Amino acid sequence: MGKLKNSGLIGLGVVAGIAVSLQFSAMAQKNVEPALPLEELRQLADVFGLIKSDYVEPVEDKKLLTEAIAGMVASLDPHSAYLDKKAYAELREGSEGKFVGLGIEIGQSEDGYIRIVSPIEDSPAYRAGIKAGDLITRLDGQSVKGVSLDDNIKRMRGEPGTKVTLTIARQDAPQPLSFTITREEIHQKSVKSKMVEPGYAWLRVSQFQEPTVDDLAAQITALYKQDPNIKGMVLDLRNDPGGVLQGAIGVSAAFLPPNAAVVSTNGQLADSRQVFYGRVDDYSFRSDGDALAKLPAAVKKVPLVVLVNTGSASASEIVAGALQDYKRATIIGTQTFGKGSVQTIRQLTADTAVKLTTARYYTPNGRSIQAKGIVPDLLVDETAEGDGLNGLRMREADLQKHLSNDRDQESAKATPANDEMEEQLRMIALEKTQKPLEFGSKDDFQLQQALNHLKGLPVKLAKPETLVVQAASKPDATAQGGK
Image (cartoon, rainbow, N blue to C red; front, top):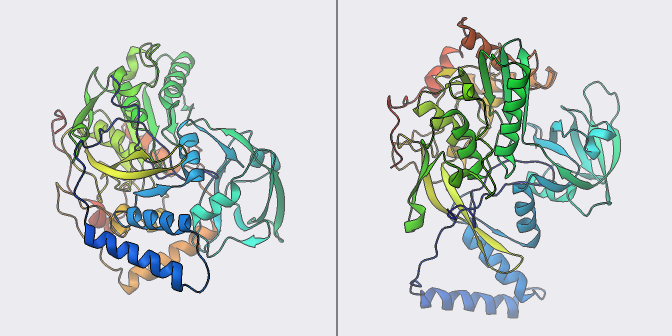
């Protein structure tokens, strides 16, 4: 079946050198062109002519028209965008799990700098000595403050063999550190795993890319070779920004009954109203086999926990929602980001495209997570002391012009009271003194609670005030075909 091959569902991830990831699905164009609003187009032409004749200095026609297109698309919602040559190339590279850059997973720090989440193993940044928790304060001598994260990512991108100098603030270093790093093509593995305790496996998906299903199958097979009698498994989707839809379907299919409905979509176009199932035609990019066919049968029954947090978005929410609806896994962590929309890539020229929101997606029970997210079965903070900065992250509902949830009333976020603001400031101050969290480590509090749940031991739940804020509707009891 070719319906997943030609356009795109976009994730929200940020890896140095790539800001979004791409999934291909075929959404047919409408056969009838809509009538053009001639009066408004005349106004556009008038403004174009006015700028050309009266602006303080000459402006190129291409710049004016390109910016007009970009502004028109960006006005729709936070995820629709015009992709110029560079952005389009980055998007396509990212879906393949490779890009030219430094090899660092990054995020915005609370004080405007760029926080290193993790250097990618054997990347230029890793070999140079960049560490998790480092703060990038300057790029080639220019401050990163006051510049959007996407623009700073573009500054770190470049051609293979070119260099960029990072100024780094490190917690235990008295003076700023300087690293000159040579850019190269990075091949990023989106899945990793290990046995965290005898009988208990940890499987992390950091982003959904074209190779993700193959990588997941290889990692699960390796885990069962190491221990054929695994007692429980933790699927870690924290800070997973999403990516290719096939990846989400395949990861879900690995744990669900054969051919189970995983996700459905609904939009204006007839081809956007579909149900996707856990079958090879819906999750494979290849025609030469099924990566999941030889998985150990035990993986369908192994007790499973899915870890999520505010940084879990889009494709990762599809997986969490499907496994929750079928009661195949217990979802533990904090409420997810809430991106429940599908973006399609419409190519304009050989080098440019428009990323356009074309549908909402729904869990097997027909739940929309748009601007709401997945509410875990067990709400557990990031640390024993509280949810730290995870609780302060922006979510879909915070974004201007976000799509509404069409199947559930959206609850508006209240402005924090003074005491809540003081608590947030206290958490920020605490975070600055804490060691950056390494997912999968012995210090990973949420992972330890997941293991406790698998062992039947008590789980330390989130504070009561967190439960009041986040505990929204619970999932339906029975999973059905997508609507």
